Image (cartoon, rainbow, N blue to C red; front, side, top):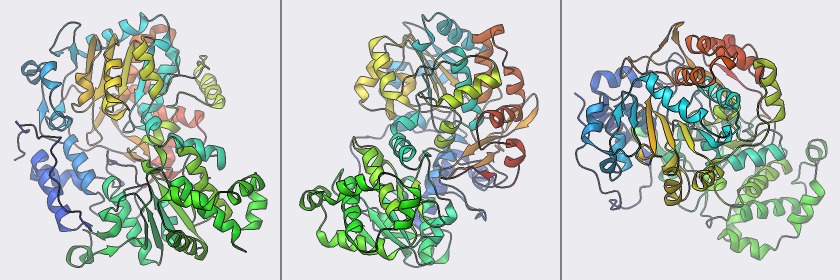
Length: 612
């Protein structure tokens, strides 16, 4: 039987500090996974649910966006993913009685862990102005409250529509369609806080703001550089891919201010070597970079490549690049001592890295937040791309760029149009398909949305998933800004800090999770997601909903759009709610790469979008 939620609240500021580990996963990971899952779901539900995670006929893990191989293990999930699934498929429930017993002033003093452990939200809840207690309301009343606030605004730009990366392609497309038909491009999302710099740098250099490799490319690479990323902590299934690459002879350089146990040694819990033996050492060269020193490192490597006879793929550079001479002059004149000091590394370490790069004919560079969340993130990633361009390592098997996304569909959300600075071609396609004139002025990103709330320029904040106040920078400023809103709305599966940092009025709208069956008037529905490598596939929930009154994210958007836009909208919102296939038909006509969307995504494993 699943355990009840914790009654106590662990002391978040007094962590138990132990000696560092030098290996990850293995038997302890299995034991911890099963213990956490059983506490949330019980034994039978754990078995039925986990065996459907990331399977071709199952549901996409709500954890990370690492892709699945074509041939999948029966347990195609990691410890992190199992925890995420357990918290969504939990037997614990947050009912109106819970809110009656816990006013907002009480919940605001609880940790995020405690809030999340209480279970699934089951009813729309409303916090009236001046009240300290959420009370249940009907779905109709909830939509009326949102519509009344939105239609009372002086301008559509006084509303902010935030999106989390767990939102499906269908929900994201409908959400941006509603926001733009309402009249604003205020569509900040979690990408603003993670790989925005990757998208900017890659668009400026290779023309596509995404990675250029597939999972199979990792197995063909001679060298993989993992820079500013902790796979064992944030993308554990990546360790299995690195282990397979190592078995084929791939070398790995790890660039990180701190050693990570998973990159030192991986004990794969899915094979005998990982369970009984010492596991697989993954890192061949560890570069313990100084914080923020990655740009200097790649500049130093580029300088040395330019200075090494025959190291530059001249034919590739001449045929496929521009700006080489300007870049080469800047790199050659870089002060070697100053660059070395900025890295915190020794000359010998950089020479060792250079030797491995020069010995490789197929190099992939993977990165995440350690590269993207600096003021100089964009030029750092450009240096990474330039290294690959110098060696001809873009656009061929076993080589290229690999920005590893975090949330499960954060890349798909952006593909679907969740972006405050949409391309004119995308807006043109929307206008042609739906017959309204989308706004052309750029909207607010996350930071500008916080400033607008702070200054009173934004009055309604609507979040499709996520935990905005905990995920955004400068917590105190963000919370004070959000509290100035007239209305805050959160579409969520479980409680988090953002639900207790409210505007004058607040709504919590509970929604279906990935694990749950989505029944609409048109029958059982599925949604789609895009992983870190541009692969699009279906996700089908199998569990009964946590509560029979829950609405899906697409249904919430469609009903809200009908209530707000009324008869002025010719968009078939009711049809979209009843049958998500009709949404995918429209996506196919608006977004390049999704032609014949319904037929292609019905294939086992889905399909891959065009790569750089």
